Image 1 (spheres, one colour):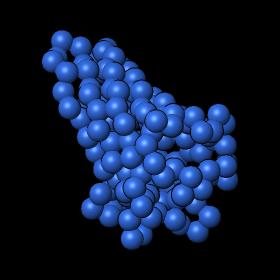
Image 2 (tube, rainbow, N blue to C red):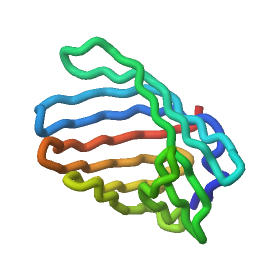
Image 3 (cartoon, helix red, strand yellow):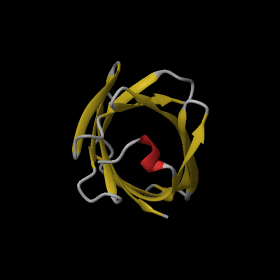
Image 4 (cartoon, rainbow, N blue to C red):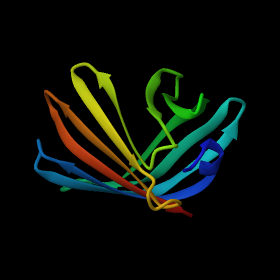
Length: 137
């Protein structure tokens, strides 16, 4: 399965955000770039987010991907831990607790180099599933 360096480069993203709390579906289309830095890879995502009854808006985020033993540690841009990926598995599950919200993630690498990331987020004012499909750009 993919190792950290296998992610280097540009990826097309198509994301669907199903919000049960708001009973809406949002769509994101964009590009992710995995760029080598001194400690691993910088993940930089840019694109357009479309939410119902809202004008399209620019959306972006950055994360740090780092080698962590046989796995990959995913960190927030400021270096705080986020979650971990075991690329030896074809389907990976992990979580991030951000009290009062809980974030469960599943990565699916069974169709590599096409892959999927699914976030299930629950909290007092959050109840959504975000499904992101990645393919080489």
